[in-house]
Figure 1 (tube, helix red, strand yellow):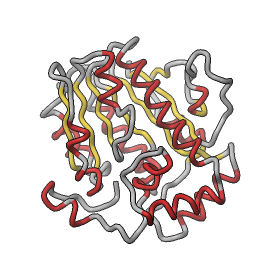
Figure 2 (cartoon, rainbow, N blue to C red):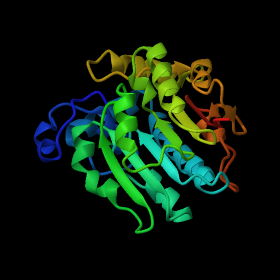
Figure 3 (cartoon, helix red, strand yellow):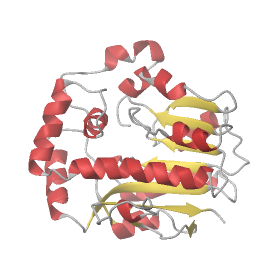
Amino acid sequence: MTDPAAAPGSAQQEIDTSVPHSARIWNYWLGGKDNYPVDEEAGDAYTAVFPGIVTIARSSRAFLRRTITYLAGEAGIRQFLDIGTGLPTADNTHQVAQRIAPESRIVYVDNDPMVLAHARALLYSTSQGATAYVDADILAPDRILEAAAETLDLKRPTALILSNILGHIADYDQARSVVTRLMAALPSGSYLSVNDGSRGIDPGFEQAQDAYNESGAVPYNLRTIDQIAAYFEGLDLVEPGVVSVPLWRPDSGAPAPEPIGEHGGLARKP
């Protein structure tokens, strides 16, 4: 989300394949194919220090699937604003939502050139619903809301999805301000889903991430569990609240989950 915005015709030219990129490394850890040798090398170097990062990446993706399943199913939400989309892999927001409710409408937001280059993969939708892509930075919430309103009716309940994106905002108060602005524009009955890397559970993860941030790569800032919980201030948390993501409504029949350094939650705007 920190790379310069690109027009669709120029996105490919702006992709630098000589420098590892966080979105492509994340894609590699998820088992995706949209990455380059330099990203695989960086990803392997990270896992050599902290092998658990693969579990964190995949647990984050599973949390997204479970929360979208809840929103489209039990909560009856039909509109989704997913900011910090990242590269497409399996079980993207529109795929999960439209499997349950084909009429669901989804707007993805990112400003990464490679994500933009893969926009067609994200734009596939059921005929009953809609999927759109907005090229914008999370630090421009008004621009995001204006563009999203071309596809979504923001007077109707909408789910705001912020998965592993707020950590890219260096200043925590600014991150909270962005969340507040976005949720203020959504009506009662809307939902906020947040999950991010956390401090206080796994010192090995914290050391590996701090070293990565000092390497010159685009930094990702881990937050304390209390800081992540504060994003939901004024909202009604869905049980079990803000927890390590494997503990949020785990799939029935799955092995008993263990806490990891990734926390999240889901909450309804009263």
